[in-house]
Amino acid sequence: MFIFRHYKSLVLIAILFVIAIIMLSYNTRHRRADSQTDGFFRKLVLEAAAPFQKLMHISSTSISDSWEKYVYLVGVVEENKKLEKTVGELEAELLRYKEGHLEAQRLAKILAFKESLPYDFIAARVIAKEQAALSKIVIIDKGSFDGLRIGMPVVSSAGLVGRLIDVSWNVAKVLLIIDENSNVDVMLQRTRAQGIFSGMGYRGGVLKYITKNQDIAEGDEVISSGMGGVFPKGLMIGRVSFVEKLDTELFLRIRVAPYVDFSKLEEVLVLVAEEKRRK
Image 1 (tube, rainbow, N blue to C red):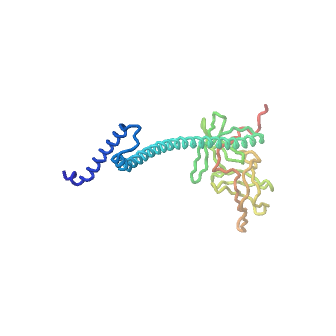
Image 2 (image 1 turned 90 degrees about the vertical axis):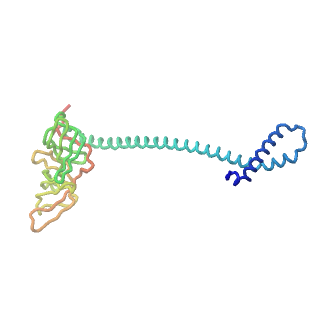
Image 3 (image 1 turned 135 degrees about the vertical axis):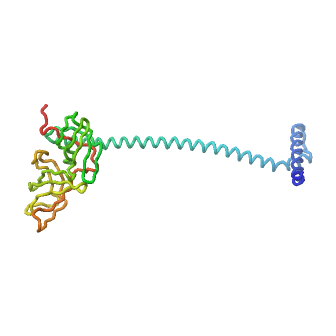
């Protein structure tokens, strides 16, 4: 009862409005088609109902527009999801094509290098790396079943990589020339002075036992000498990057930067015979 008394005026107005709407609807349906005048009461009801009808029309239109926008946005979200999925698939496909193209370029270089040397090689992929503090070793996907044996030299299109130190049936370990336990008999291509290349990890290597009276300069190329019977003669090792002469020492201090980028090594060739078999 308290609520009715508090809102009595509003309730009466609402009742009158409903009655007016009913009467207006009845009058509209039953008045003669040839009637030329409208009653005062009908006009009054029409004027009073117009704002409410306008408000109801605006509300209905607003709800309809909001629903249409909601349905449209839901469709846009779903379409965006489909487009994002398609873009991701296309990017992955492009990445595969790019990787295949780069691999083809590397293999083409190795094939050209293989054909340029009078040796028989077996191609292999690097499948793992052992990066201990003093050890620089990689593992390849070929082994004794493929004809590999301990001691065989390993090269890439850039130059000498190392030698096999352990061979299983399907895999083998390669001791890189930059390993601190690796020593390679080498010579300077320009002067033919001979020495030993010793690894220093990823700092490259040093050229030992070159006396101070030898003619050597930065940029001189270092190749395998063929001495020692492990590596064939003429394989590219690197380039002299630093030379220092000390009065208190008999030999020069020489740093060598290898041609092979061991951090990016992916494919190699294992030398299995010193001369190509004649067909």
